[in-house]
Image (cartoon, rainbow, N blue to C red; front, side, top):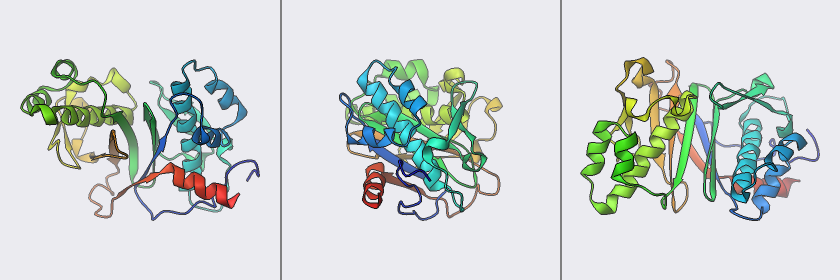
Length: 268
């Protein structure tokens, strides 16, 4: 492994999990310590690509997202191969979803989401076919009009029955769930958001109902809602393999990425 990059093998290993979810603060203006750390695990070509973003907040989110993905894919892998994070190359799907192109042994499902001041990155292991995450600030604009435009009818009715104090949170739970699902599918907004609906929305683990049967088998999917940090709501969408569908050991770990950066710095 290159001596110029933080060692993924030296980071504290987590208990085996279906999905590991990490969150990291991102600067909205001048790049800070988190951005500088993530740049160290990116190849020079990717750093130059990041510099093309004109808005500092967009550049910072991109840098942290790519840095997290590279480091965590190496950290999540098991086996003797010590790939450096900057040796990973990515490919893009038809609708822009990134995946690991090389090396093949690091081609695990992963996904990145970001909003003002926050970046999430999730990496999956065995038993997961597709994975999507989304995060939103609780300050994001919400309204029943937006819901009527994008949500399925059962979700609109549910939201309309909420009191004013709860309506914002309910809207953001539905929105992050929907975004996480279409990101997992890799289709983006090519999959219309009113073609599926979430039920038991206030549960930590809502369920999905496919209103369009072409979307497949809803029982293959599981979802989790969480609050990674104060002021943010997030959702994770996981399509499991048939063998893992009823595995009672499934778990989702959510941790601050800064703890990995601090550990790596101490080991350098």
